[in-house]
Image (cartoon, rainbow, N blue to C red):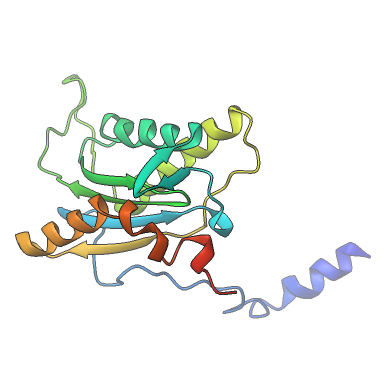
Length: 187
């Protein structure tokens, strides 16, 4: 019986066409491995506050929040074209800026040139994966990230970059008004 069910859909190649399709949130005409500054936000699934808490405008990290920082600072070892800029880990999300610079030394140890051109999605996916693996190993098996992430290509003027850096740096004092704060989420 299951074989007939499978064959029924296998014959009609168009049955699943355009169903269950998830549109990309990325700008279609942009090469996300191109040189430039990128701002991104990653949220915890269901906005659960695993990463710490804000008290009197100061972010206090949990064990999991500390792990996120640890793997953030490890990114350039794995992605030589990635330069870390600004980051803030909030109770249920993080905001960060990275610079992708493909003109950095293309070889890791000088023995063999290796292409190090990685996209924003590669880098963010790696961060999420490494964090999840080690967080689960530490006994927090109910931790998971939201599937997607928000990104913004930062214009190459200092004003745009400075405004986003300011937003990241001063995110904790505004936690009570943050749309990711569970008390502000409208269901």
